[in-house]
Length: 139
Ligand code: DQA
Image (cartoon, rainbow, N blue to C red; front, side):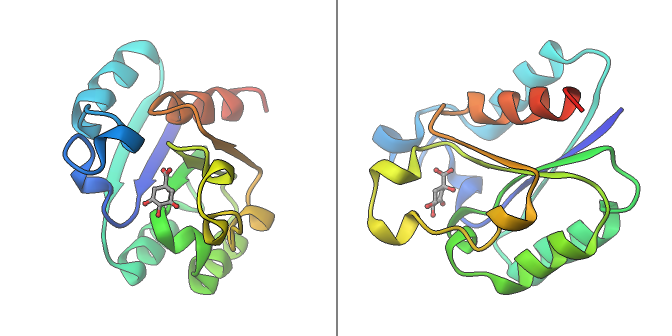
């Protein structure tokens, strides 16, 4: 089974950025744990701060991967283009967030992507990614 994780803008700064919200682990450290947890799954990781690059990655893997777990960062709340890319591909996509966006500013309550995703997981810290992968295994 092949799962693609896609992280959007500013998520390259996990472990450094706003630690009280996002924690002090880097994503690379968490990824090592994740790979140990899911020994029989091939997990690929991609991060970009650039909207078009995220779209290109969705196009690249979105017809062959078994599942995509995406944290589009702030693009979640703004990007019709990423929403369209998710609608265009055939691989199921799970939207995840580290923080509970519904406890935060109102502009984070709206997701442009969610209605094109299989489901949404938010608020479990880095474990949101693990839960995202678990949810793809239910199918
Ligand atoms: C985030 C929540 C977004 O609102 C924010 O812009 C992020 C991270 C999260 O994982 O909690 O960059 O997607």
